[in-house]
Length: 289
Image (cartoon, rainbow, N blue to C red; front, side, top):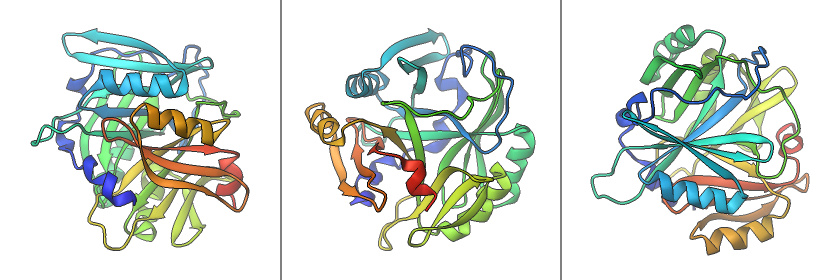
């Protein structure tokens, strides 16, 4: 189940620093919005031991294009759909056993990166990198919650993406798999300014007002895995994408299941160990239940 594949995510988190990426990366958006939506997940990076292989996998799966930015500080790959940039790929630390590994980082928008970083430390979390000013992109922080789940905070230099319908291949949702969701709820409330409410069995929904932003689900009781944020990407046909994912070398972590609203979801491990999900249907409708 989930905890078996997540074992590959136990990488050295202190090595995930700005030094693994170029000194400059593109702005969050091609055109400024000058709008800030605190608590919204506005970007995602996957830190991987093999950026090229990871980029090839996701670009083939979702028909994304790739753009590589490199300088003496490192390399960063931007993956884009026809609607614009979707996620980034960066070099992560090697494992001691030299096996491939990857981990997704979701970035929450914040108006005050320094204040959010202070909230992380004062509520049982820890800072992994930053606060750091990234030219053209904005202020960045990578942090760990009290269970060790890695996440990011960002104050974008050009504003946040406005809420809009997510097209096929777009980033639809993030769910945190954790041992004690009810304990983590207050932490994320203080750090991201989101509100939490009970959701499904033992889980929490994170929202701003009546807009759902993310969720927290409970890991199996016998697991010793660190809490992990998992991205959900929207697809038109889960069945077709599953076949393609398998041909590309992905492993199925959680078999497809249909939720009460009719939404179909499945969870996978990519070719370097990163865990992601695909969803067919309206995840916002399910999340709001």
